[in-house]
Image (cartoon, rainbow, N blue to C red; front, top):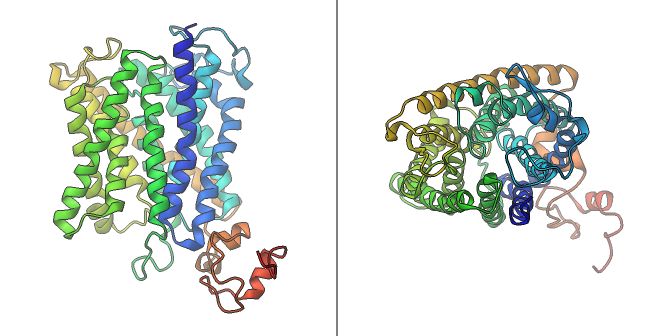
Amino acid sequence: MNSGDTAWVLVSAALVFLMTPALALFYGGMVRSKNVLSTIMQSMFILSMVSVEFILIGYTMVFGADINGFIGDLSKVGLTGIGYQILDGGTIPELAFAAFQCMFAALTPALITGAFAERMKFKAFALLMLLWAILIYNPMAHWVWGGGFLAKLGALDFAGGLVIHILSGVSGLTICILLGKRRGYGKSAMVPHNIPMTVLGASLLWVGWFGFNAGSALGANELATNAFVVTQVAAAAGVLGWVLPEWKRGGRPTLLGALSGGIAGLVAITPAAGYVTILPSLAIGLIGGGVCYCAVAILKERLGYDDSLDAFGIHGIGGMWGAVATGLWATTAVNPAGANGLFYGETDLFFAQIISIGVAITFAVIGSTILYKVVNAITELRADESEEINGLDISEHGERGYNVGLFTGTPSFFGAAETDAVKFFPTVHGSQD
């Protein structure tokens, strides 16, 4: 065991953990004020629920002994036998690796929630996301990272372009189409209610992404250094790649656009971070910001789907571009365990990436559709009209994100009178505090 490598992986696990609360703030600021708590709750509940699921059965499904290239066996249920022994081929305890992977598993379904924000009942949401984590994320992670058939095909995904971003983005698009548009979509303004909250979330996501990508080197080494630097380069380039066309097309550069471009650049470099050099990472981020802007500003408008917070436009499209870019610019000069891409004279990796993208898209669409139909048959997924109009914070959780006007005796910011405050805040109402 190498103590430095172990320390870096544990710190990286903590950084990836931070990304889920950061995502909650990022998404929470972009919804309307009546849905801020329900949006944040979705990410935070997934963080806990999927952590338990991954410890019990997820880890063994992903990293258990391979069964015919499709799934891991049950030899590591409940982390049985996982302790301080060194990870095969590594320098860290397998338990540290399991903790790191748990954070990835928890973040991925949280990304999906941006696609159907503001219109799903919580009970149905919890069941849908639990089944998605077990039946879609775990198999796909095994196919790519656990020795499954895509790994044997030669596909490369350093930190989650295929497994995390394409899978979550396409699943989100599928679910939001099946669920239907938000009531009033296209007719009334549905603008972010708190951009500073979104800035905080995006900033913390950016910080966490260093653990996401550089931590995937599984050691404090040259590979981690490369992944760290290209992550910063691609994210910065992604901001430019988004803001410049937005500025030209709309006449003004926006802060939300800059934040979205940074996330797009981070998504795009994720599968390639351990395989590409500095200048290609600049191109990956710059193009990633541009193609994600086009997906959000043009494609979504023309096709008319209601991807509330652009989970598909950023994660789905950005992940696809990143996977393709890995097939173009990967070089064994960075990672001898990888492969050379198309721009280095070899074609095998490029075609393996294209096939893997097709597998991820197909699996996400078919799997998410089936799970949606099953869950909706058990318990209704779509919020009622009155619940959606009044906001899911009250209807699903009995809470308010902001208490503006609650104690004045006049209609509040939410259209509720002081009597509503008595119901929801009985111990506070009437006190000087």
